[in-house]
Length: 441
Image (cartoon, rainbow, N blue to C red; front, side):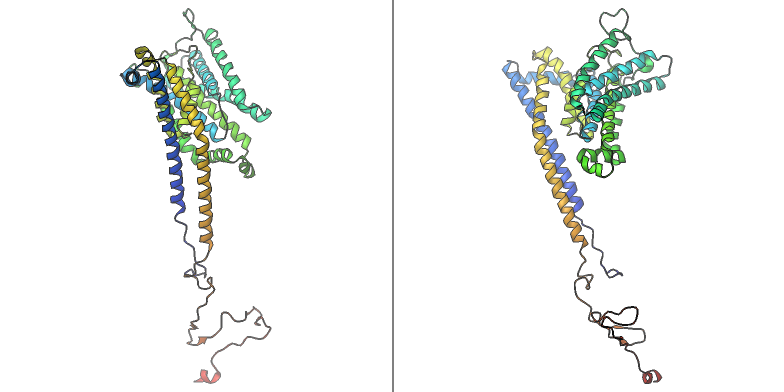
């Protein structure tokens, strides 16, 4: 029983398990949808392979051998994972603010161009200065290119999807001009830049295999986006703007500024992907089409990962597996490489079709959790009748005894006494106590 006369209600114990159970169910559902979409995509690919007259079993063996059949193939698969993962993280950051950054391909190209320019034009620097400078230049280039879309949306109301698609085309032309003009290698048989100096290259992890140390950038980006950002004020504002812009505005958050910042950060991650394609590439040169549609496939990686940063690397490995193994599939079995594109497209369609039911489930679970929290709070606000009899409408009939041994017969339910010494009826209160004879005795 509390000394103040009011019992402290116990904290609700079911709120945390219910929230964890709901979160686990949503993650399991999203994971199951992704696995189901991949399985159906593979099924469609096997049906098409059978229709063409090729053996499905031989096709699968060729796909596996092309992806992980040798150390060189495995290293190439791992190298493809890095740009795909960085682009996927860029999509996730923009999606958290409810922005659609379809311009990741163009931002990736611009990031690669700027990194190549810094790597080739700056000379005489040690590797611990030159390489970080080239990587940072790629991030700045991608972020600055994304800022064009963001500011057009924020200042002029231009749809970011339309402007990003147009800027993707512009980025391709910029790269084509650069490798044929300012950064062109003289005397080359086809358009390409010169070879990057040693100080601007990512070192190889094992021997001369193409897998390089740029994977550290991917792991760091996953940790920042998936672990650090959600625990910061910026991450909270980002999620608040994405979940309810009106509530964010009411809370004093500058929603437009947060959305622009998310778009720029998304472009910076795509720029990092572009820099990896150049600074850790197989030839350390930039050529036409070096982005190889990684900007678009990275969006699919993010969708398969359920827009979760911690699931990006496994999803990126899967699509790297498809891209790496598809080459041998065409060479050995004669199945066209477009089968990989068909599989990817099927997965996209299925994920897009399942997004609304999953969102409905998420909304329903969130509403149920909110209702359960409200009920728990109402129960917690009620005093416990067992601990506080006065709150339950009962009084303790047992009289109390003062230190002098006399009994206080004052009724707690009787007339109230104010500070002036009169009760509520206006009469002087009668105070019981020992008489003078009793005192003398």
